[in-house]
Image 1: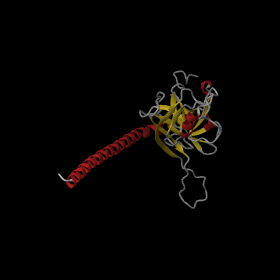
Image 2: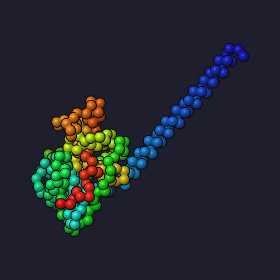
Image 3: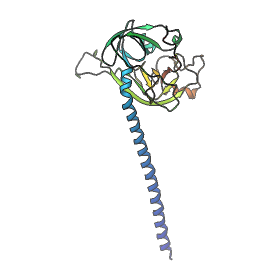
Image 4: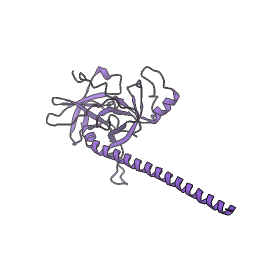
Length: 269
């Protein structure tokens, strides 16, 4: 076989190998795309299942300026109990006006519980003798990379008329934001912040629920990512996280776990 024939055979062999390589890459890419689509569909299905529960257990807390969120966590006789952030209720005065998912408005008062005085948690109580409201099922502390759903009312302003000068009309929007746990600290930050997660919570969602994929309450929203006030990234014992961990903390939203707070004796007072 002359050199031209050898060259053509080599060229054909190279084309064959290159074609196989391209087909393999295409197959892998298609597998990745299909896997991503399946994962997205699974998340959509989870959100669809959890959304009615999330909305039913969430209340809007009306404040002097704006509003925040809270979670229905327990019932005793005709009284219901709401968990929210302590920093939320500082924006108003007792009795607080809360609104349930059905549009009913109630007056709620603070319940002073010593166990949570050092945490960014507050408990409100209201009476609804003629109503039956769903209360949250409590879950365990989640693990890193677990799916979580962060819910609450957002303070996104909506104007019916673009030329409207009156900006006082704010239409609260109930939102459910998907994400995953990015950090679970061995020891909490000051005020009890311990769950870091990727969900992009915004103003108004403070005090709203953090739910796992089973719809169980594992924590409450407390601080958005990239906090701009003070330095919240300090442990309860006043020690400072290492720089590499601190960088991850800054990028995460932060919540307070409830698994070790609402025990059997919590509401016995």
